[in-house]
Image 1: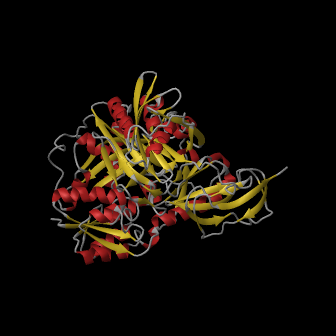
Image 2: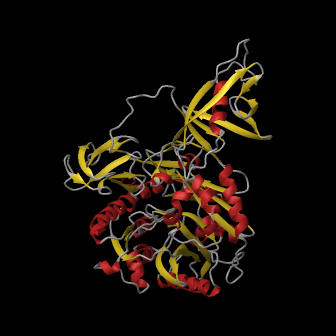
Length: 623
C-alpha cells in the first residue's frame, strides 16, 4: 500500500493529485523550483523539496534531482502528473531503480508510445521524410511531450526549415528532447480521444470519448465528454483502436489515445501515456476518480466494481471543461503575467487550479490558471451552466481568455456540435470583439469618488453653489472613456442615470427604470467593475510615453531566444517577415515586421530578458 507519494510536477495537476491522496490518507510531497517557492502546490503538500533554479531544464526536467528528493523525503511512490517528465521512460526507470513505485505504465510502453514517430510506426503509419509542394500543408510535431509545444503548421515550403528549427528549440525547452517529425496536416477535422484504463491483470477498459476540437496553437481550450454527434459505429471503431494500441504495448494505468476524425474516418494521432489535462470530464460522466484508479492499479488491484460492472462502462449525462488561461486572445494569444488578486467561481461547477488569491503568475511555466468543469444531464444544460459560471466568475488580475470561453460556449456552431479544429481560425475576430459595459466607467468613477472619504457614506458634503462636473478617464478594451458626474445636495448625479447608491465597493444605478449592481474592486490603477476591467488614466498624459512609428514592442515578458539571420540596422524587410523570437511560458512567439521598409534600430539580443512594452526594434516604412 502507498503511504507517501511525491508528485514530480507543479501547479494545478500537483494540487489535483494531492487532493485524492488526502482523501485516501496518503502523505503528500511536492517539489518546487525557486520561482515556485511560494506556489500553492508547495504550500498544500505535507512536505516539499526545493529544486534549485527557475527554468524547467534546471528543475522539473531534472529526473535525477526529483528521484533524490523522493528518497530524501521518504516517499514510496512517484506520480508524474502531465507534461515535463510524465512520458520519459528514463525517468520511470530511475524511479523504479530507486525502489519507488511508479504511478504510470511500464517504461517499455512509454518508450513505444511516448515518441510519436515510433507510435505511428507501431500503428502502421509512416511520417514524411521528404516534403514536396504536393505534400503541403504539413504539420511539424515534437516526438516527445504534448500540449501543442514543438508543433507548427507549414503551408509554404520556404518556411519549413525555419519552423523545424523553432519546433526543435521549443520541444527541447519544454521536454528536454528536441526530436521532431513531419506528417500530413488534416485540416478542419475533429479532435476526438478515448480514455483507457488498464490493470496488471490483463483488463483494458475504454472509458468513452472526449471531443477536444476547440484549440489554439494546437493546445486544447474546451473539452467535453462524451464526444457529441458521433455515429455508434465510429464510436466502436475508436474504442477498438484505443484498446488495440494499449494491448500492443502491454499498457498499464491511465492513458489516452488521440484521433483526428474527418469525413467519417478516424486518423490515429498518438497515445499519451499519462493522465490528460481534460480527465475531469471523463471523471464527471463516469462518476469516478481517475487518480485514485491510477493508484489502485499501481498497487496491483484489478479493475472491478462500480462503474466497471458494465461492459462497456456507461456514462451519465454530459460534462464540459474550459481552460482558463492568463493570455490575451485578441493579441495573438500573448501570455500575461502579474498578480492574481482574486479568483473564484460560483458554486455548482468544479474548479481545478494551482493558484489562490494573491499568487503571482510568472514567465517560466504554462499560462493556464484553472480548469472549470460543468456536468449536467444534457449537453445543452452543461454548456449553459459552464458559460454562466464563467461569466459570473470573479477574476481580478492579468488579462484572461474568460470572455472568449463564454463566447465560444454560446457560439451556434459549437452549440450545434458542428465545430472542428479550425474553429478559432474562422471565428476569432468575432469571438474577441470587445463586449464592455458602457456604464462601467461611471460606476468606477463613483466608487473612486468615495475612496478615502471619511465615512464612505452614501452622500457627500454640499454647498450652496452648484458643483462643477467631475471628469475621470479610464482605459477600457483598448479605448479611452470619460465618466462625468456631479456632487449635489442630495448626493451624486450623472446624466441619463439615477445614482441609487454609491460607496467604495458598490454602486447601484437605475437606467430606464431598471436597477443594476456594480461591484467595484481596485488594485493600484486597475479597476474591476463586475467582469469589466478598466485602468485609471492620469489627468494629463505623459508626453514622453511615445514611440516612433514602426516600433516593435515586447508583447509580453520573456527571453529573446533568436534574431533572424543577418538582421542588422539597415537591413531591408518585408511586412510579415520574422525578425526575432521571444520565449515566454514555455512557448516561442514570433515577432514580425509590421511594415515593408528598413530595419532602422535593433535593440534585442539573444538571451536578453525583456519586460512588456520594451522596445525591441524599429522598422522605418518605405516611402
